[in-house]
Length: 274
Image 1: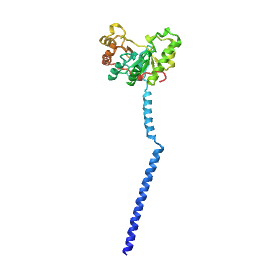
Image 2 (image 1 turned 45 degrees about the vertical axis):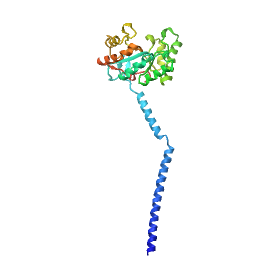
Image 3 (image 1 turned 180 degrees about the vertical axis):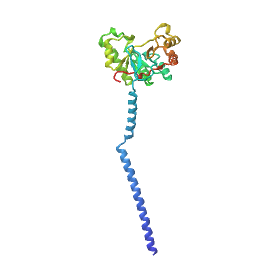
């Protein structure tokens, strides 16, 4: 009797071990299958993150236009956007003070366009400055290669002044300018055609003062920019890469805001092809 009890107990123990072993093998097989499945799609998670990044970039590029430029060069709301806006622009960049101006604007959360010249993009240091300005969120506009009087050039020379700079800017920051401003505001029918072919919005300005001797100091410049009789909703304001302009920027930004003006974000401007 004891013998058969021992045999029975032994069989029970062996059966239990077999079940446990079978469960262990089954678990190992499951883990193996899971590992193999992941190996078959190693980039799935990375692709998902890449897709999200692309979607974010696409959304940023698809910001709906809220302002249209008029024939006079001012800006008007397309929908129900704020009418009391002014656009800040800075020509002849990136010379000695463009980066300082950009940093000040960034701190003040004040958008603007920087129009660049090709002769300020000769060195690696100048190219790096352009990258820094663009990385702070400021769009880069085309102000020609050498700042000539375009009407005095042949059509081929006019094209080179504009298109060559677009090529250089794209090589440096990875995108072509969306805005064009001719030196001295001197456009020709041909430069208008080239700007259109390049998908750029051609603009002049409403007013500017920082090249006049009496306004080549921060206090006088800030006062005239904010209190001039030419200030109006949608004004396109011209300034330059100058020492006194850089110093006047904080007072200019504050002055417009105190008067109830919002600084127009260039991303909201309707441009060709947008």
